[in-house]
Picture: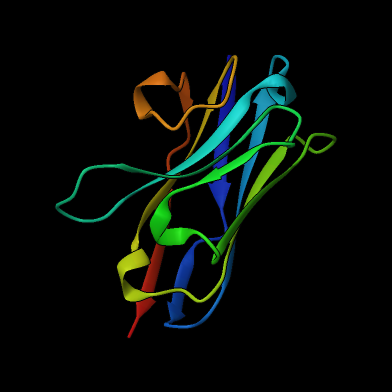
Length: 123
């Protein structure tokens, strides 16, 4: 069992930055592949970024490539999402997720989810 707690969301103006954190606790949490997903009002949850267990492989959705950076600190069992050049369309509830095995871009393949942290970007 893995518990995930997100933090770092908030209100920011367009062009600004935020860093989201996802603290993982529980059995062997550092051995899980991790992902970030987001859900805007009235829309389905969508993939944002993912990172492999060791941190050597990272993946990004096209809308965030070049602006967002995912990283992890396995000693602290924490995953980060650095978000730069934020746009109003990045406004959403951001979720952290964990899965055993290989990294995945598919929401249904993740076993554990956090409660989410709200990101609001004003124009």
